[in-house]
Length: 473
Image (tube, rainbow, N blue to C red):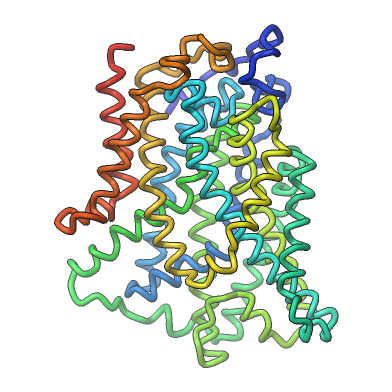
């Protein structure tokens, strides 16, 4: 870990290759004086992304599946501690060289082949963008009803709320990455205080944390528990496996390696554990107060008697969804789409493409079976994300020993050209990792491979890539 901390920041002069088709202002390396994000900014980034409705709901699926409260909380915390490792490793190149994720991927997949992992990452981001925008839109619609009760009779209210919230996201897309830094830094303490207030409300009004915390595990045997635990853990890793790939998009603005490592360690696992516990505790209290378990916070807020409390909570919910959406589901696909045609698509245009596709994917239908979407989608997509992470980490730390020729990442016919811009070895390793992860869906006898999709995909792709590229050592 000390070598990660001590790595110097590199600034590369690319002024003489401005005509290259592989570079634009948004994809170019950040200069050292542009790297202004400190430890607090990265901790705030993760607080802002973690405090959201899907995090609140994570424990509900685990408890509904048979876990007790501490088993669910442990699974969530362990999954986030695990995903922090590739997060920090992939972040390293972003901080050292100032490059975003699709540019880093050029080293292992080729200057054109990098579009394969970039677009795989972008697709899931567009889906999540639509989902988070729909959730935020419903919270906004509830806020309008609170202020104008007649609005509840307007049948197009949910759609209008969705489009207004969509417009709020577009505003921050147009303003760029510095506005995202400001938004996350401003929102983090407010969101934590609101979450703590919700926890205090649950404790006082529920007479303690209630029945859920006293419910035993529903698994008859240890084997039954492990059969549910393994895919659940994979789902928890998959929850942030997306950001573990494109984290260089943020750490390219870090002041130092220490800033990004400590900031992420402080901000990610503790916040996920804390906010998931709030979901468990508050839902526990609803059983005592209302006689039923209410997992959806928007529905819960509608039952509050104090208009002031409802207003503050809804505003917090809207800000929480906005901060998560902008950071987690806009920054990466904006850069990924820009990587396709750097001279035609910049960050803003890439972000707007994401916003439009987010509507086209009809999130209101994706959310019709929310639990199945969250857990089925996360595990399934981790079959692709794990192998990509394995290849990036193997290439940067094992094959290249943290040394990149940054200029060649932005030109054709350089050392990352491979075969007409594609590295066949990287693509083979990716296919091998995806195959071994998904084969469990087809062959029941090895279904455990799918349960471990992210892990087996990571290991297979890492190993195959190393064997194919070891002559580079």
